[in-house]
Amino acid sequence: MTHDELVIVGPSRWRIAPDPKADIVGQVRVSVRGGGLRESTVEVPGQDGVVSTKLGYSPAEVTVEVRVADFGQLDRIRRFAEVYRNRRGAEKHTPVQLVHPATHRWGIREVYLVDLEEAPLDWREGYRLTLRFQEWWPETRTKKAAKQQGSGAGGEGGLLGQGVSVLEVDRPSKSPPPPPKR
Image (cartoon, rainbow, N blue to C red; front, side, top):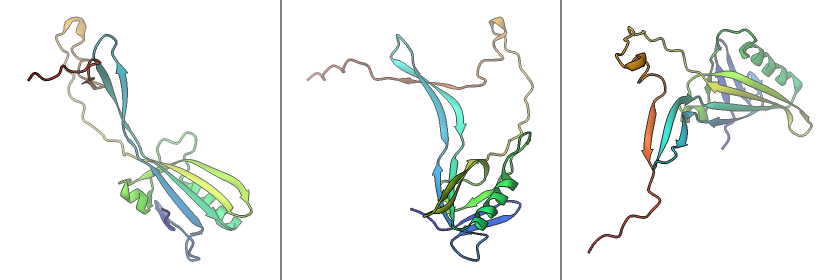
């Protein structure tokens, strides 16, 4: 399913639509690849079980493909990309909001521009620019608790329980269960 209009809201507002009154006149297609929990699963030799390690969360990715008929419209997209593109040495991202049913459906509030690709001119389809965004999560500041050194052997008490959490999951046995007694 496609939607004909995308509004990009940041320090300035850009509307991409086939409407002649839009900021960029063209067709737009938005696709979302939802982020989620990243895990690493390892079978433990000699045991009936699997160890799953939670590695954190991966952000969602949004790909916006814009097709325009004339070069002037493509130039407007380039100007947008120049404003929001992260340059070498940039210390922080410039988050924007993408107003589109696909981003709303997946609960993606803010994104930042990760990559852009301009395809060669196709005489039938016009100019095509692909913008890839990644979900932006503001950095959360947490208060550091006072360090408590555990009384474990070798001074490991302070390290246990911190960092990566491990979840053990029982795997079904290879042999089938015995039949029920009658």
